[in-house]
Image (cartoon, rainbow, N blue to C red; front, side, top):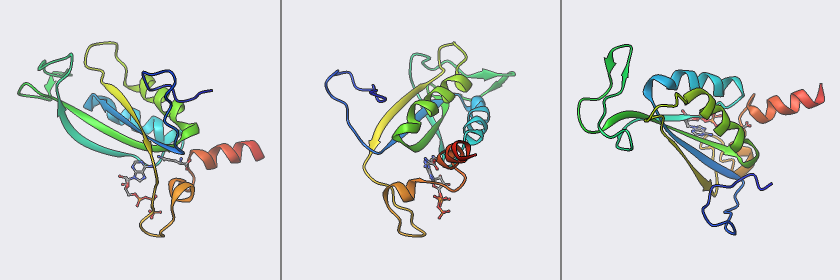
Length: 146
Ligand code: ATP
Ligand code: GLN
């Protein structure tokens, strides 16, 4: 404790029940990242194709000879994952483990507090809406009761 250490000011820790982990990653690493997340019970993930500019600049992403970008922006994938506070560091560690090559262009992760979650189908809010059947929390509680 504190689990959340994302702010630059040491005396400011935004507290929330849920956080959004937003990761901008190499497209060809996404499959590996998402299957690892699924394995740990992270079942709610949103991905978007994005293009960006960072330290890698306009340098084309190459993997197995194929190009992912033709201009000054490099093709990336943005993963957005809303999880409960206690799951944040585990998700970040997993993304780091699966997405990192050590080369420039590995990407960045942003952490944002989320004020509420609403499940459209049921109208549930908060913890009930964020919880997913067979998700990480279910997996953990199954472990501790067996
Ligand atoms: P339901 O039980 O009604 O199916 P659900 O919680 O399983 O609700 P979905 O309706 O299946 O949610 O989710 C729709 C979309 O919302 C998903 O395809 C995904 O893009 C996004 N999503 C759901 N949960 C999360 C989450 N925790 N983090 C990020 N994106 C999510
Ligand atoms: N926190 C949810 C659960 O444990 C999972 C959230 C997610 O899959 N993004 O059920």
